[in-house]
Every structure is written in structure tokens, then in C-alpha cells.
Length: 433
Image (tube, rainbow, N blue to C red; front, side, top):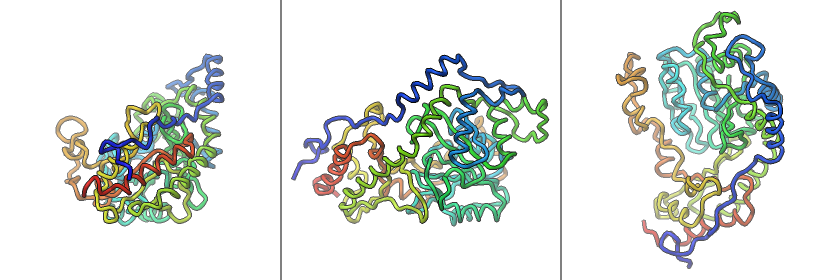
């Protein structure tokens, strides 16, 4: 029996894991062409042909729309900005309510606050981790404007049931697809399942250009409003003849030509990068499935998962120790990923602490010191612990997430991950109950 590293034994892994570096010579060549052109941005904040950006931005948008089979793609400087654009474009009013997930990156939940609307947290599914349709239904009121769904960890949301519920109550669907580009449900791309979809081009996503985001929609009016909010709407509406002035305070959410040039080549690589990711997951799961306390991710019927993270449920009864002890022991056996050393070992206890437990929601403090917008909403909003019990159980007890299945990992690298988990399982009694 090998002694666990957490108890002073030798680590399974002694060298760093390879970095995820999908950007290569093609992107470098594209960036050089931008430098030669001397056009690094061509956006103008006025009603002019350059209102729509430069040649790389417009080409990137055209290619993205064609790839995902949608009418409109709008490039912005981040997926966070894209979410803000989407909330504004659907006509959100102050004190509207928007149903959001508690178990995701914070921008999905704070986006309503940008327009002084109120985030309402629904619980998540115990097996697929997306918003639960039954929980959503209990949160709908006469103030509900929209639902922000999240294709969490790389799996599409329950579009059939949630879209039907939204149609019944005349609600818009904003789909946060930051973690699931190229995922599908019933043969249709994630990100195109709602009214507006949001993709991320942040540096740790499937494909990236450093920072960036793309919005997609088949709705002409929404596309128009998204472009206006992206680029100083208030300065443009008069000359453009825009009559609907709701939320036409614009921002500078514009993408640069360099980012767009990189994004164009990254999009071409997306299918092969996802294919490699899926191959790595299959290999890992074959090895990890032998461990009785680990339950591999479940895939929604007729869905194609693309694994932003590999999210495993932990069965504590089978091991006799709490998940946190198990994970700490696994982490002690491994090493960081190159270029991301400051983030530590990329194996986590859960994912994001349920967002309503953040200070902003606990104290009802967003704009100013008097609790706006909650204090002027005329209602009391409960963000206390316990409002989303499944999300809390997943985070504090059940879920293990890791990122060691990304492209660039060799079979030997993957074997080290499997060996670390198996070693801890076989020696679990050494770290106590």
C-alpha cells in the first residue's frame, strides 16, 4: 500500500501538466495581417458604416452566424458584456424579475442588476446541474421578464420543457452558452436554443481570443438593439431613427480587430478541439468508473456534452469519508497546469458557492448604500441559505469538478489522474472518517 502524499508519501505526479494552448501559427499569421493593415479597430460611436466595426469583426460575425446556423452574430469584448447587452435588449424594466441559476459564474446572476431588475434564484437539477423547470415555475410572478439559463459544464439546458414554460408565461430566454460551444440538443446547437445566446471567448474556454464574447439571435429587432447597446446607443438613435428608446444607454463593448482575427481561426478549430476533449473524457471515465464512490456525469437525453469541466458526483456512503477530505488527498497527489500555476491544482470541491450567498445578495447592497434596487422594489426578497437545497448539496457535499481532460493531455497524463483517484480510494481509511 503506497502512502498518500497528504500524509507525507510520494506524489503520483511530479511534473506540471501541459498547458491548454489552442492558439498557434494560424492565429499568429492572422494577427500579423492585422498589424500590416494598421487597422486595430474601426468602430465609430455614431451612425456610420463603421458603426458595425472593422473587417475582421464583421467577418468573424458572419462566419459565426454561418457556423451556428443563425441569422445574427454580434461580437463584443466579453461574455459578461454580452449578457448585459441581452438583458437590456429584451426591454428589461427596473424592478422586473429575472430567474437565474445559483450555480454558475456570477455574471449570469448579476446581469439583471445592471438594469435595476431583481435576480430570482431557482434551484438546479440533481443530475444535469442546469436550472430545474419545476423550481423555475414556482418562482414566476407577474413581474417575471425572462429566464437566464446556463449550459453548465458543457451540457445544454432542458430546452424543451423550459422553453415551453417561457412561452406559456410570455418570457424571454437568454442562454448563457459560455461553457458549451458545439454542444447540441436534438441536433441543434446550444446557444441557439433560446431567444438570445451568449458565447465566451475568454482564455480558459474551449476556444478563445484572450477576452471576447459573441451574441447570437434569429430575431432582427433584438439583433439591432444588441448592436446599439454594444456601441454608444444614445449617440446613435436619433440619426438612425430608432424609436424604441428603452435601455438605449449604450456602452463600449466593442471587440478589437486582433481579437476578431484570432477568433476566426479558433472557430475553425472548435470541432477538433471538442473531439479531443470527448476522447479524453471517455478514457478518464473508463478508469475512474472502477471507483465505487464516483458517479460519472449524466448526459441529457438527445444531448451532446462538450465538457468545459468534468463534473463527478461523490457518493460519501461508499467511501466513509467526506468529499472534501477525499479531494484534498487527490490534490496532494497532483501538480498544477502550466501557465495556470497560480490557480493551484484544478480539482475542486463543488464549483461556485451558490451565488445568493455572496455578500451582495446577503446584504442587499448593489447601487449606493440603501439597498437599491431591492429597497425600492416594494417586495421582500429572500436569499437565505436553504432556498436552493440541491445547489447547496451539490456544492458543499456532492460535486467534484476538474479540468484535467483538456486537449493536449497525453494518455500518460490522464493515467496519472486516474492513478491519483484510485490511490486515494484504496487508502481512504488512512485519512479518517
